[in-house]
Image 1 (cartoon, rainbow, N blue to C red):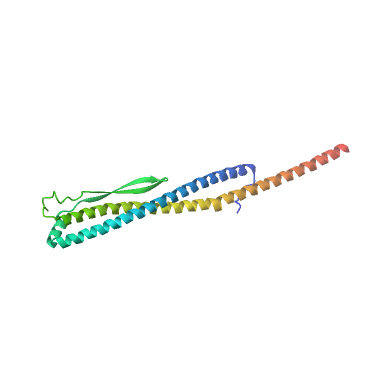
Image 2: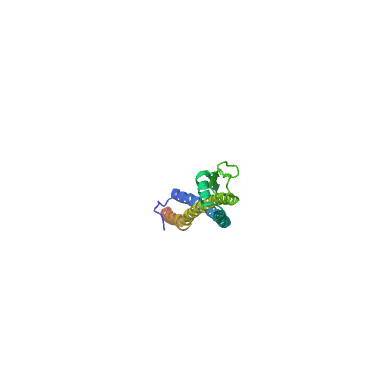
Length: 211
């Protein structure tokens, strides 16, 4: 497709400059896309490992809870659940991956220490193990949330960059090149016509001189 432009030298220079800029942008965006894809798959592999760790911690926590229920009184568990809770908060920050800001999530909470708490001196080893296991699980869940949120953002940025690369490669750059060729062709034709006209004028002048 040829863009609608005036066929003159000034326009030809502009087209050449735009074409060079578009090709440079295309090259940079391809590098960015490729870098994002590499980071995405690295993070994906890390995500699989962390998810596997989270699943193992969940199984461990469930096992500890089952032992606590078997070896403790129901009333004891209810009292501990109501009166001895830790405080959890989540801190959202950000980090940079290939120029893309992705969330960095950190869990900030006071771990429950039932050994030192005067209100729960009767807490059994099974209960303490259960609480400790769920604390570890909570931290791992936050880690998984951070990684998978980053994966989503990376995937969106990859798709966005791919669209821009394809737009330049298959639409903008070919249009600029086709238009540049068209303008060059028109200018060459104009030069040939001007040269022919000059030759005719020169021939007439020479003929008059002979007469």
